[in-house]
Image 1 (cartoon, rainbow, N blue to C red):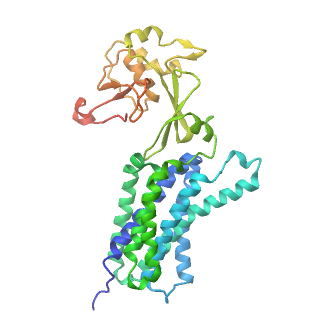
Image 2 (tube, rainbow, N blue to C red; image 1 turned 120 degrees about the horizontal axis):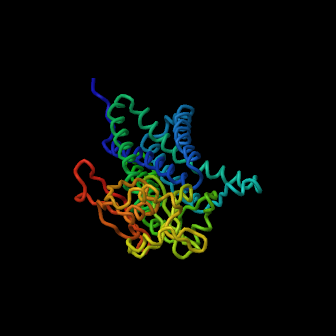
Image 3 (cartoon, one colour; image 1 turned 45 degrees about the horizontal axis):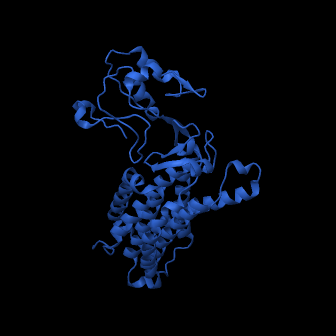
Length: 371
């Protein structure tokens, strides 16, 4: 018996839609860490599963047997792409505010409902697409599942390398572009006018990309005194990484800058420093305007002060904006790297941040500290 086959273009199409779905899920988790609270961010996972389930239920109730497979797949992938673009607009412009929920519950509940629906729709479209291609080609599901898993794995890897250079907003645009390309691959001769949806969406993505900086996502809750207004008015530097969003904020105190992780969920500070470690010993515990001048509290330097002048080899995990590193070098720790001011992409007089290079460390400890 001959084994059933599908057009070869279905395989990369399935790979793209699967990769885009997983990359979307992980990126939105990071965004919700910033937008709301970390524990609320996991609503993304349940929404993804719920959306996939709705896609399967929809296909069960309405199999669409009279609709050609090419048309249904192209339409599903294009809907996924369009809904991701809509989600980006919702995240950038919808004025959700968790603090305002107490005083204006009805408007905010409506806004949060819109946010949830915008979050749900991409996974519904993706679930419908994947369920269609698998259910209509069950005889070769082993082959299709391979491409599905391969795409999902690549999507998971993507979250480690994409948010840093192009930001979370740019990553969502890339997801929309991948889904549009998937729609193009799925669309055959029987797709009809739906063949145009993929190319139109794919052409729209690079046009929107330059505007992604204006679509910067704002936090919807006050975290340790940091709100969307403070980030907007005092922000000097912003960067997404695979774990969080980092903002450097200007403070009223001229010799200190605040570092806010995930909109203030965690925070630390940079302190201005002239590079004179010997002189710093005399003034390390000084105060200015009632505030510690070089640290957020004397406890930061306790372990380094107790080991002072012994050439201690110090490993700093969580450098507190360079405060731990500054304390270690001030009290005579042996530097296993090079001291540099500032942070990557943000030149300033604040720090220091110890940059440990691979060649400076023994082989078992080849670590490089993030600048």
